[in-house]
Image (tube, rainbow, N blue to C red):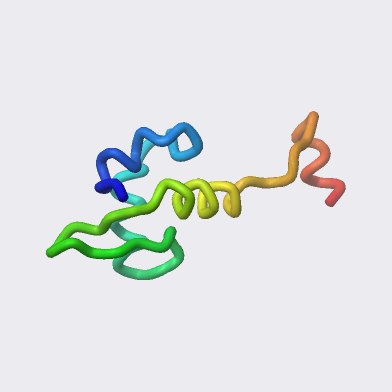
Length: 69
């Protein structure tokens, strides 16, 4: 299990504001599954990857494909 700052450097989670986003989602819901150690949320790598994959769109070759769907 890893802390929030380590979670932010996962390849699938590299985007601006990931630490703030995960912290907010831990409060309001909608984020990856976590457990707490004291006041710190801890994430399993597989849970982070699963959550990140669920947020991705289908693969496309052009932005025009989004309009067709």
